[in-house]
Amino acid sequence: MKVLGVDPGLTRCGVGVVEGVAGRPLTMLGVGVVRTPATAELGHRLVAIEQGIEEWLDTHRPEVVAVERVFSQHNVSTVMGTAQASAVAMLCAARRGIPVALHTPSEVKAAVTGSGRADKAQIGAMVTRLLRLAEPPKPADAADALALAICHIWRAPAQNRLQQAVALHASKGLTR
Amino acid sequence: MKVLGVDPGLTRCGVGVVEGVAGRPLTMLGVGVVRTPATAELGHRLVAIEQGIEEWLDTHRPEVVAVERVFSQHNVSTVMGTAQASAVAMLCAARRGIPVALHTPSEVKAAVTGSGRADKAQIGAMVTRLLRLAEPPKPADAADALALAICHIWRAPAQNRLQQAVALHASKGLTR
Image (cartoon, rainbow over the protein chains, first blue to last red):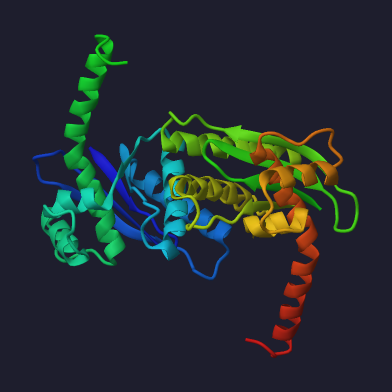
């Protein structure tokens, strides 16, 4: 499975592509950051993010795009920009028919470090180890994007089993 | 000036086109709602909103798109969807080179009713009167979109004068 992880943000949108399956060593295919200038108009920043995400989709052709699920109770000053950048990433993926998966920050932290309350340094260290990199990806947004992709690869089998079980029950008329 | 007003929302995105200049009677050229099913995946909903907004831009070719400025302190349960829908509207406009203007809900209310704290019924009544309609546009999201467009037409002259004054000062080296 090839997954593009997106850590959404207006100023820095982290992007990272990881290939692999649960239980096997993972491979990083690319990592980077889509940046937009804080001085630009909001509409133009969203267009720049769209262009950046489109380039990553063109280059890597991921099967899934994993985006951080944004909560409104987070940092009030940045949450709107995060929501808007995530909307652009989801739009780009869905427009191409690529499934979009959302994972919460604590799901991502728990997946790669074992703790839903891990800090940035821990995430960077584990991403470096799991992808066998020479050093932690920088900035942190890039490492977070890779962590999202890893989280999705590892969680997908459980999610698929759950969906299959629900579908099976539904086909038997056991649930609506 | 022809303005497309957008009252962003995932379930109901109000859209309304108004033509006119400040100080002259206004004309409504169209009003409607772009709807997406709450049961659909978020990515697909954003694609449906994009398609809806694109149709309105194709049909009416507005010179400006006026979008409600979303604040994170509002209703927590809907604000993320509102931010995401507004991002799509801004993206569609900016991609075509159409200027995007943001107005706060209280600016819009004050523009059409004289009070920044007016309720939905007051806004509907004033939109109906100002555009000489037979009855208030429904749902409220459609009326709000028209109010946004009216607000922009009426505020634009003042905003332009301000921008010209800033540009003049800047050209004289009076401000940085």
